[in-house]
Image (cartoon, rainbow, N blue to C red; front, side):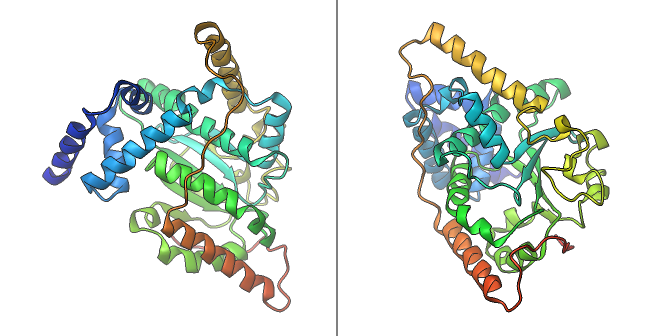
Length: 337
């Protein structure tokens, strides 16, 4: 790390000494004993501009305080609703990389977001983030004896269709929550099973991304198994990467519980049980805190993110209008980085 970057961290540390007690407590929940590394993430997200990173961090802390984010892991979604969310917002954790980073799998193509209201999808997503940051990553850090503060994401594009436009607004809101409040938490994005519709959009979206984001994205051939085995063991491969002829990330897993999107998968069972236990503890120790209900004020999308969303929408409509173009566009893989 250069002298300039070290000075930027010192300046931001000094500015953070002025926060009040409640803000200090929520910052401790964020950094989990690693404040310097957390400050570094926000500085990276604002290209090492101390003033902009300070504003971003203070805005994030205020968002956490106003929306009681510190308590979100004590507010379980009713089990039937949580199962519905898991069936339609496909995300899970399949294992760890050889370097000890959690491997997060996302079923982009088959996520339908049509079995619950938007607030539950947002709540579940934030709970996943908080569980990662406050349970999974600290445990990985302790196990390996060195700081682990990021994850790998494997994005399955199987089944991506033009109908995905219908939930672009919700996805943009969730992406904005991540960008503003959980920056630089992903080391690498691996995109697999990419159909033509993704290839067409990627060509126009890629130039709009910031360079540090572009460098993190790798588009792999087919299901990406061979490339992913260089960074993780077979046991940690998401189920949709385990065989070349995988047809669906949702319905063709060899064993039900190997599907890390499923509510019945060990990761989601551990997460859900942890939240239920935290709710019991909170009821005992802090009965005045609101239980169950959770609503987050969604931030306005960053202008650049809004531009990207609009570009995707425009490109989808172009594809839709092309003569003979089918709404089902699976099966065309692409290479590139």
